[in-house]
Amino acid sequence: MKTVSAATVLGSVLSLLSLSIACAMPAAAEEITFVSQGGSYQDAQTKAILDPAAKSLNMTIKQDSAPDAYPMVKAQGEAGKPIWDVVDTPPSNCLRGGKEGLIEPLDLSKMPNVQAMPAAYRTQYSVAYEFYSSVIGYNKKSLKKVPQTWAQFWDVKDFPGTRALRNDPMGTLEAALLSDGVPRDKLYPLDVDRAYKRLEQIKPDIAVWWTSGGQSAQLLADGEVDMLMIWNGRASAVQKTNPDVAFTYNDGLLQNTQLCILKNAPNYAAAVKFVNEAVSPALQANLPQYIDYGPGNPAAFSTGKISAERAKELPSSPDNAARQALMSEEWWASAQGIAAKDRWLKFIQ
Image (cartoon, rainbow, N blue to C red; front, side, top):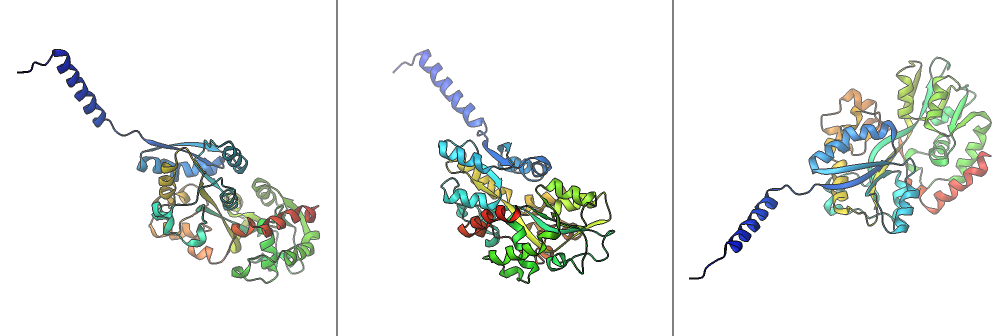
């Protein structure tokens, strides 16, 4: 009979013990680095989406913020060693990054929540995350008649008052064309010459060309202008402290930020899981609890989490979305869109 040394027995016992401990230990949590635009917006999505997603996926979500993420996306891509995984940014950045080999195409086979969303709410490289609108805001007290369309905004004779527009062609060119009778569903491709001609007509009556959301809100709050283009979240914030201020979603320009994954993301598989979870109806329905932005996934309105009264206040609710034009960031990312942006500098000077 073969004898076994004590050392051999001890070694076997230790090996089995190590194996049992390893099996008993939970798998290490996956992690990603998520980048958004900071401020109250990122605080809101942390509570509504990021924290719940981290819990449901058993994932660590590290955060960074960059109001303009694209330069960093480009720098990381050119270095060949990205440190970010998922970015929340305007769709044009995702499209541009995809064409330049900096953003991964969406793998819809692994993203059932993304696949179920309307095709108009996603691109080859990105999917809608939240919606906001460029709307007509106004002061009810200082105006005898309040504008409800861009045609009325342009009508300085019948709707007198001081005006402001955004110092940016995106949204402003669309508003000009809507004011000139172009149907909401026939805006694209934009007739750039017609839009700039229409803008030249109202240019003498624009008191301020605003450059930031904060500035637009201050113009409305202080009564410096009677009517203006403004983002719905900024207008609603002013409205809470000033009952004379109001805005309409009629003729609004529905816009969104989207989620996209960096090329060669260090945690690609986890990033795919996160994007799918982040646009799930249940998590998307949480967002309006914390901020006046609309869910990127319209199925959120069918979860029962968003009341009918709250839905009326949100830009992407079915009723409000039907009154607006959906901005085509794909057009703005095209050669024609880039040329229209370049032309703006000459117009505004």
